[in-house]
Image (tube, rainbow, N blue to C red; front, side, top):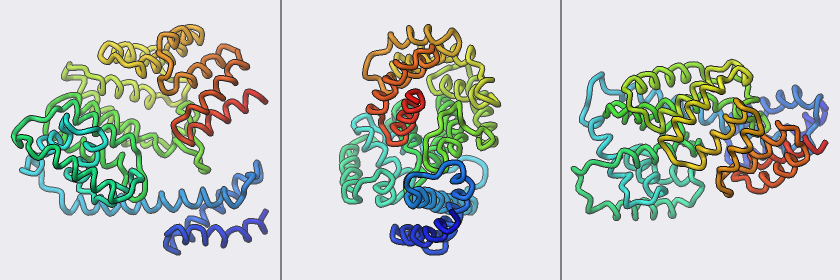
Amino acid sequence: MDQLLRDLGPQVLGVLVRRGADFPAAEDAVQEALVEAVRRWPDEMPAEPKGWLVTVAWRRFLDAQRSEAARQRRELAHVEEPPPGRTEQRDDTLLLLGLCCHPDLTPASAVALTLRAVGGLTTRQIAEAYLVPEATMAQRISRAKRSISAVDLGAQGDLTIVLKVLYLIFNEGYTGEVDLAAEAIRLTRQLAGDTEDPEVAGLLALMLLHHARRAARFSADGSLVPLAEQDRSRWDEHAIAEGVVVLQAALARDRLGEYQAQAAIAALHADARTAEETDWPQVLEWYDELARIVDSPVVALNRAVAVGEVDGPLAGLRAVEQVPDGVPRRTAVLAYLHERAGDRRTAHDLYVTAAAQAASAAERDHLTRQAARLRS
């Protein structure tokens, strides 16, 4: 194996350099990938050793680039951060966000315009983040500007739409040099300073609690790691603590909304030291609250999972029957509950179907592995 790694090292380095990585950073990433291979390969040699090394090294390179970019942004923010107290720029945040998230705009246009006008990102950065040509993104932003050109600048924006757009940005995660999750948190944090609405604080808490788990969501080879199997020592305790504090302050205002309820569920997961210690009865109670606020089949599906944990898989399956066909992840939930109920054959077939319906390669591969595990 040592000779194989010595042979593959220069080849992997060449691939990273051809992809645009600068030589010193690429070399560091390859070294980290080789160390990871020494640790993992004695247990299970990958079918494509070179491909495995390229994938791991490229991820390590991107992680390093993002960390460096984030560090530079923090340093710049520290230098440019105004003293405590409201400023004209901060006072305008809600107005500008409301304008960029005008109801006349499509969600995609609202996201692009928000990142450009409020986030200060370049058109190239936004295009790269959404994997579209720069010219396409420029046209999208131009059309959005034309659509709202006649809007009264003094009109109050719809805060509900603003929050939905910010959550859309957050859920894109990060691509290239732009960490959209971090950008969404920054904008939401800034918005929270301009309004006392508890739902803004609820969304900020939800983002912080989800973002705290990011490092544990994927393994070194890029495989998706479900919540129950994540290494919780890799969760960001500071982000969790901040999220809980923000949530508690929001709930104290006694005006419960959907983002506060979602954040409460995320906080219960974050509070459990192991998956087995999750307080599922409380999680179910919060899903009941959320279902009263939002009539959503996605909420109903997630609630069915909680029902399965509290009252058993058969009760969970009955709850899923109330969820319409075609709801994302419905088939995967059925597979999970059938497996818990002991029906491995049905669970296997459902995992295969769910893999074919998956929205991402990582999710598809995870569901395929679940099916293969049951078949074996």
